[in-house]
Amino acid sequence: MSELSCESISMAAMAIADGYQPELSPEEIGTHLASCADCRRELGQLQALSNLLDSQERRLRTEN
Image 1 (cartoon, helix red, strand yellow):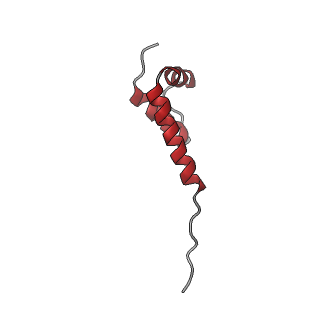
Image 2 (cartoon, one colour; image 1 turned 180 degrees about the horizontal axis):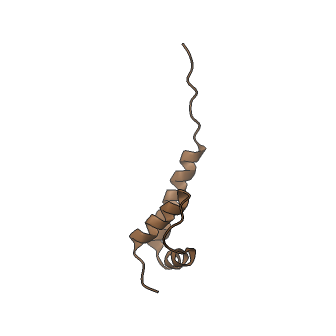
């Protein structure tokens, strides 16, 4: 198996979060994440941001 770049892992993780099938297998992503603290940290930050955005409620427009 060839060494994967952090950029390719990031793109695959974003594809998964958006509901798409990435070009990389889950095993390839998991193996890279197990050995790359930078990618784990970035993925955690992206997940935290996504959770924060999902928790927000849209204001309803009121008629004046």
